[in-house]
Image (tube, helix red, strand yellow):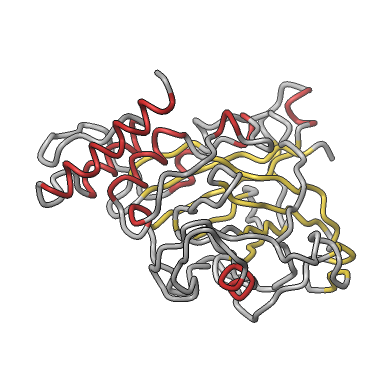
Length: 299
């Protein structure tokens, strides 16, 4: 389908839903989390089992695949914060995320997947308005063709999203020196925010769980979550996670505050960083979405 026609249909569907008082509701989005299809009208039953623990999806997600090494981007700095709930009150669709770190060498010998315990998995991503914590001031003050409300107002639409500092390429700060990261060059934040940033240590099964929100978009990028894996304070993987475009479309169409923003300008197939191996497996939950990804390491 022509992209302009598809986006036009999405906008028409949104206007029709709002005119009818929000007929396409959260239940439809949750069904779309399970199927990846456009959300059905409210009241349409679904027989898809509800998954409450994202780790249950790890066994159906891709395994024995080397995780893609990606750049850390212009927004990373070491928050040195071990926590599972990283929301800090940011509005958006709840997302429960499970990640499993495993050693690819176990795949080559035909044995069971060998987990990597006691690794520290760190994630960070933008909020529903497309802004990263630590860079709210930059996003608010940089000139835009369309004026936007202050991005530090929870739920306020941001018409462009986050943008890197004008004078900071992302590696101009001091090297990290925290409890789980040492020696990685950081970006220099413009404020003291740390929402949607945090880390967890893998358990005996190589698994970590996070509670966050579905990421928003910003100019030039498809929705994504950044990730680093640290072993003995050394970064052994820097990568990014991605979401099915149909799922993102369904959420952005009807769920506030995503729906207050214009259509995104970049999808998976036009994103310069996107890699299939980083596509999460997603499923519905009682109040949002659950997602899982296996991170294969060549140790």
